[in-house]
Length: 53
Image 1 (cartoon, rainbow, N blue to C red):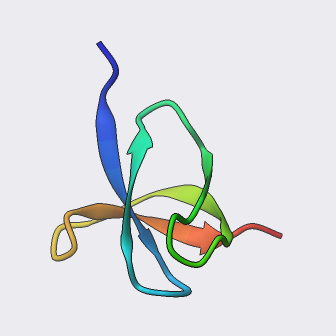
Image 2: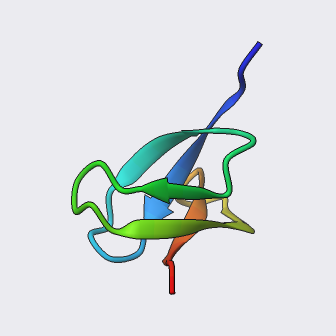
């Protein structure tokens, strides 16, 4: 069974849903390429997605 996690885009401040095994996603709102961090925010209930370089 595929596990989902929330990823917070630091560019547009929107939440994205991602497969638990994926380390890089494209934001569904601003199309930025995000590296999914291991840092989890309890306040946002999401992992932080940093802009990929």
